[in-house]
Length: 144
Ligand SMILES: [Zn+2]
Ligand SMILES: [Zn+2]
Image (cartoon, rainbow, N blue to C red):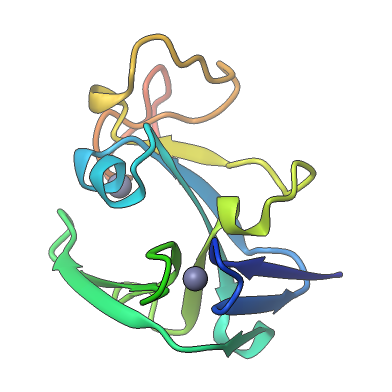
């Protein structure tokens, strides 16, 4: 399986081989502002499974966990396409929306439920965390 994510204009591309190791949804306010949408959905692939082509600019910010996240976006059209979380230095994060593939694997957990837009419904089967993935998800005792 090989999939290609790309920015709005197509100049910045990420090709990922194999399945993502995990996919998550995030409702934090930083992700809302970064993406311009009400939630972020991200996939994580091992670095060795990813090939990046095109020019990017990067913007780094500290995550609430204290680790830095460096987001790469197309300097021409501005789409966020991929990122490096210093918490997971051997992986690339790739924006699920940039694949524009409705059959892409669904998230396996969701974080920052406290700032989720209330009209948005997610499956009760999806582990959901009030804030980051620390502590037990809503309605469950232990995440791992
Ligand atoms: Zn672009
Ligand atoms: Zn977030």
